[in-house]
Length: 247
Image (tube, rainbow, N blue to C red):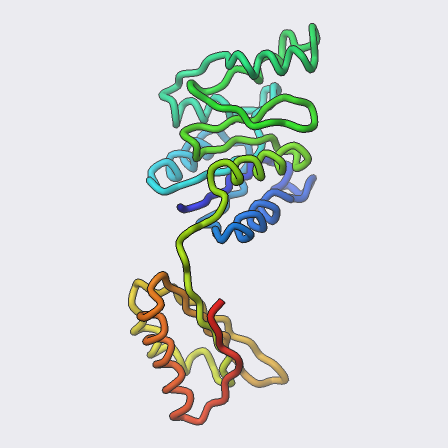
């Protein structure tokens, strides 16, 4: 699965608030052996929201966590844009959501708060432990939560524990730190097949160049074969390297 986060809030981009969603979701994904494919922090712009939702929808393996914009104020566009992209503009008052809102606010639910119960067609609910106004999700893979971390974080955990508890596909990784320039290894890097994910991080320690090379793949045999090419290269040129292992 390819995990995306969409964090909506002009106040994040203009510095009025700091984002806490990405780090929390990323940590929860890594705990379950998943990783982010991409993360977007965007302003409250309906066209931008629509385009990003469409982009993510086009990925048949996508899972999206969207934060913000599901309230009742005029700048809360997420429910409507989600319906436009994912349910062909079809929305309905979700009876359980409506019940939860009425139980929480009583007559004060009208005329505005009750609108938070109007959701894209066939939406399912995520529990809000703070004020009982639920988040929602579609197709078991597009999750929409409030912009408040105190509300959204338990929803993230609920969603992951229910639908994406742990990645069962084993991914192998081999890493080394070599006492040379990143540039020295580029010719070998160019030979790495597409089945292998390459990461190269240059460092300068005490004015000496270092490079941290990391290869990962679902295929352990191909991974070890290609990783050994770097080992042979380094040993042949008597370049020192440190600790490499499978993680």
